[in-house]
Image 1 (cartoon, rainbow, N blue to C red):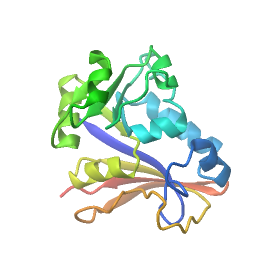
Image 2 (cartoon, rainbow, N blue to C red; image 1 turned 180 degrees about the vertical axis):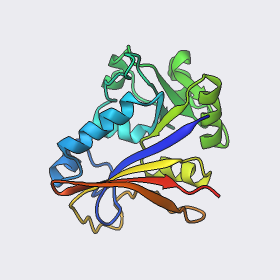
Image 3 (cartoon, helix red, strand yellow; image 1 turned 120 degrees about the vertical axis):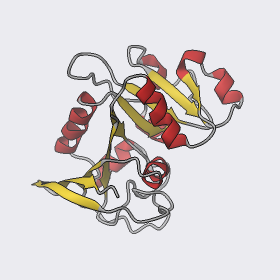
Length: 211
């Protein structure tokens, strides 16, 4: 059975960056990350069969994380995109890491992406992505955002667990990207299962309450 864990770092006012198109280095400089936060992320990747995120996250971070699973294999990275990822981007240099770009429409970027690295999902994006992963026998899914990607999974009630790092910063920018982009159709209730302070950060783990 599939199990989806959402892992994110947010400010005290629920933002995942201080402005749109903010790079990872800028986020780190503001305090959005820490050594312990990075260790937790690597541990999450070690325990995952597949990782889901948006192309914007790949662009601002410069690529994906070269971290294997505990058994030495690499998780499958799935990236939602409209415009594709340029062939000269460092993302493509990590040939040992399986990766798929997910398109909701067949455009020039879709056809310019190698066939083995693309997947067409025209509707019910979250549900059909998980159905694809389930058909491949993959069970532990890491949802890595950003906000719009998180939104469609929470809307479809497909998230089982949330690992969230509370960072010591208040952004206060209305236009800054949030944990959930644009809000959700209905509220999601969660149950706190673990809390741990570390330096100025707080690590929280929640189970999503399913009705």
